[in-house]
Length: 396
Image 1 (cartoon, helix red, strand yellow):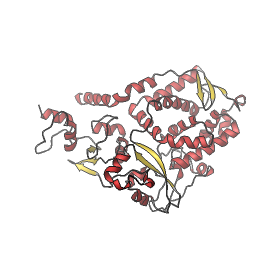
Image 2 (cartoon, rainbow, N blue to C red):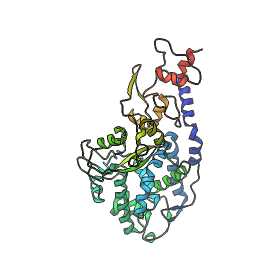
Image 3 (spheres, rainbow, N blue to C red):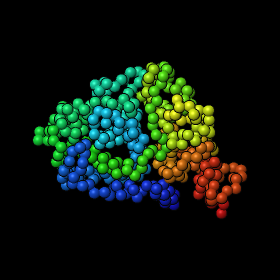
Image 4 (spheres, rainbow, N blue to C red):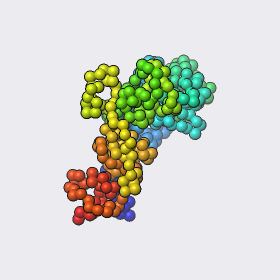
């Protein structure tokens, strides 16, 4: 019982930094009128009830919700210009969250893949390349281009962005079952509980993330920039040329399925840029600071950092690591990573510090533990793979 109570307290304090913001959104009343994609939507009470439920589902897990907000802040600066170039309303961007949670390697039960969840035949229809070497459904730039083409064609057919959204789920033929002729080519529409659940869920996503993204201007760790190569090279060679950790670069370019694939000249890849890039660059590679050709690069040390501490799987954090990246490396849920390491979601990763992928020990290691104060209690606990609770008890 005591362990469960302590676990509950830990979880509570983990969520404190953004708990109240999430609670405010969670309790927000869905209004009777809503602007969406340049249209005025009139929501019936039953429709509002369904959308309210979807809002609550999205925000009930604060850690999960904050993770989605961070991803939206990361990817939307790449998505928005593409939608604008195709004259697609920016509200459509929220569909990428609904479809995949902005995971490049997301796969549905029906084998739809990537950021915008294309099946193979639809992907080819909108101009995406699928070969043994590449899958552009997992390329945020190409996939968004494909989604924009699909929506543009649907809008030309229906003249109504709500119906264009439904067609993305059902196909243009299937959408005909949900279309009312009186709303074709109209800017005002009544939304009821009989409208397709897919549209109602998207309206909930708009309400939730439009509010949340206004609270935070950027991803806490990275921004994403586009790099175009001037010579034929593999992704590994790009990493070596720009002195970027290959695994990090690969995680943002999963559309390249074969490591040996040679990227043609003028190919585009995504570079994750740390917000502290300049400082890192000056420390590790000062000769490159004034080189304009590497202005979009992140310089970092390339080394194997996975370790075992007292038989526990762990990792030594690097300069560019984030909580999300470390959890992904350990293949564990974000909330588990926070709990295992006794940290909160707003914790700043400390380069050189040990972080664990499983529960730390509830017993002290053999030998003498270094002297510590309350200021470095957590760091000592991390170094020796023991919980802070055990360490405090030993000091009584």
